[in-house]
Image (cartoon, rainbow, N blue to C red; front, side, top):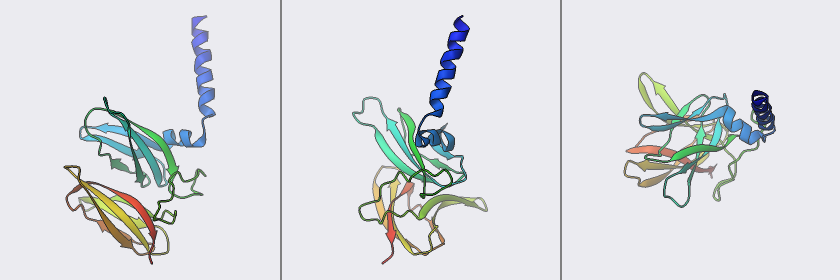
Length: 187
């Protein structure tokens, strides 16, 4: 009798799982957090670019830290969170509306941007050298604001112009983390 009760509960949980909205369900299908000796990494297992929001709760902190990452298909991205705390994926959406899973883009347009997402940050490894690159997937020239964070936590922003359908390398310049803050069409 006790076993059938657990089986019924498990069935109900699995049924409820199927009713989750596509966005919550997609977060479990495409993006996962992986613990490494140096911190945490975000893994995108899907064949499409994803915009992933990660939340970090620290013990004793009043509010959690929320960060948004653009993760290229089938890649991992190192997260800057260090020390005690718990991280979790709170949303996972495709980089462009109309992507393979049909979900809406979760990133609101930036105040100075035009709402269009063309620039992706990706990790490149050639001939044993690894680094970051920016790729413009649109046909038009785009300007991106790239934010770099160094080991001491100080930030520097830089405007980067990328021609349509091109890729440029993104030098570290002493940073341990970089992210795309906003983008817009070239003038």
